[in-house]
Image (cartoon, rainbow, N blue to C red):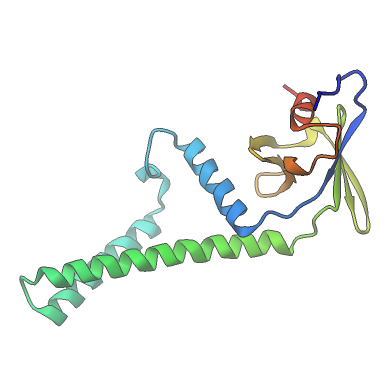
Length: 178
């Protein structure tokens, strides 16, 4: 498939798609990796004092519970409690992802995007909206998604796999401001 020259390209039509939960989770995990490229976890300064307090409280409660249940010197209680609270933490993280995903799923989503050199026209069931490129807070390409942030907390998810032929994702990326 050949690429369309920018001179002939007026606009690119893209059918809207809502990201699945797996896509949503992958997008946000990649954003975290990009935000902290040299670290396996966030810096300690990014945790609030309430979060640190909760962690210490959980540690002391688990220690007391382990001592009370198993008695002193029993390593099995520590292993069990470590696994238990790790599992609880992972379930909580999954719960937070699900909650955020439900919030974006409840929002009104456009049915199609029309991308041009001037900006993006969004078609909703009850109308249309047009954003010039300068109106976007941030534009982030996380293959195969293009995230169009209208504010710090809100973005539109454009699935670049749904571009109408003969245009390609390279043509769409060529229209983005540099």
